[in-house]
Image 1 (cartoon, one colour):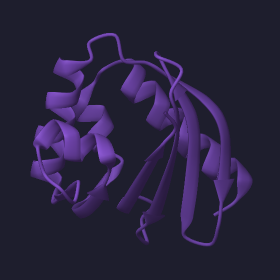
Image 2 (cartoon, rainbow, N blue to C red):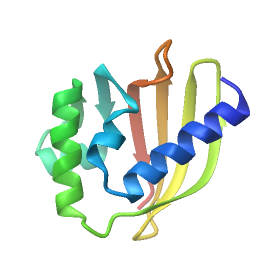
Image 3 (spheres, rainbow, N blue to C red):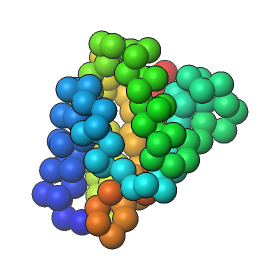
Image 4 (spheres, rainbow, N blue to C red):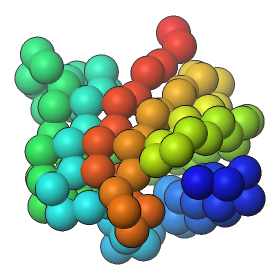
Length: 118
């Protein structure tokens, strides 16, 4: 992963979310994706906040977009590693988020861990 590849992925990801285009959002994820998030725990009523599989992730994202129709993200920074990126962004409420994304060989998110400020 290069700096340019990481920023390109991040900008496309944020643009898909800001457009609330669920199908476009889902193009960034592997079929066997695993996501862990405190927001998932809250919205889904689970203690571990895990969402496994692309179909379940799509249902979770749909629920989130419905719950937060004003949702927008502003990209603040991107960090990159060998096969991973961290997207650091602020949402419409000013909450800061860092999402660690472990990427597959074809550059899609296979594992995501979201962390939030208060």
